[in-house]
Length: 193
Image (cartoon, rainbow, N blue to C red):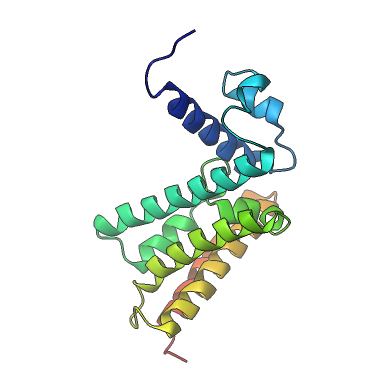
């Protein structure tokens, strides 16, 4: 059967999108090839022409999720967002509930830490890019101190989101989010150390 030009790449991108959502929603270990391919409307046999292994899929899906997160940040900055609005958007009730489309760091860090080095390096590159964009919003932008502070702010945001997601009481989760917002803003406004 002949397919239109670009069909293979479109199918590959579709598999990546479905896998990325599945990994963030259910976890890497809990997301099998059969389930991902079924969710994509494809057979298991269609997997291997696109990816050599699940590890390769995890690496590419993680890179893609990080790129999407970076693009959302850049789009909001173009629309005039400042650091406070970025923090509030990240630590919002909507992001709290949206595991499948949300931040890959908040959803996957413990599992990414157990992945092979190439996947961890891909994550590290995406993290560095995102942190660099956050650092650009700080008063001492484009300095080593701004990068350190932006890394700390992002780590605080990720941890806050993870803890809020772990709490079953919605009211308590919202309090955790608000506490994280206040702590991140305090860190952002603190004088350079």
